[in-house]
Length: 77
Image (cartoon, rainbow, N blue to C red; front, side, top):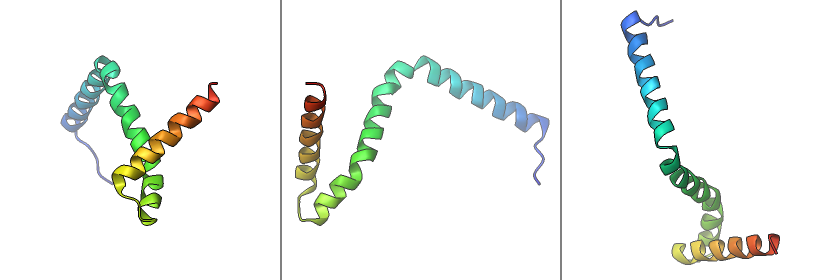
């Protein structure tokens, strides 16, 4: 079992506090990036499925985005 020294614990604590402060002050800027990452991560399997069926990647992405917009439009109608 690894035992951390007091110096290492202080350093890791300062790094953690710094990261939390950076996240706190940039949360409004980071929100669109996080949303974009989650959306890209969620639609990737559908894009790969359409690619395996012979569609080009750009057309597969556009198709999925159009389908999502139609579904959202129908849901909020």
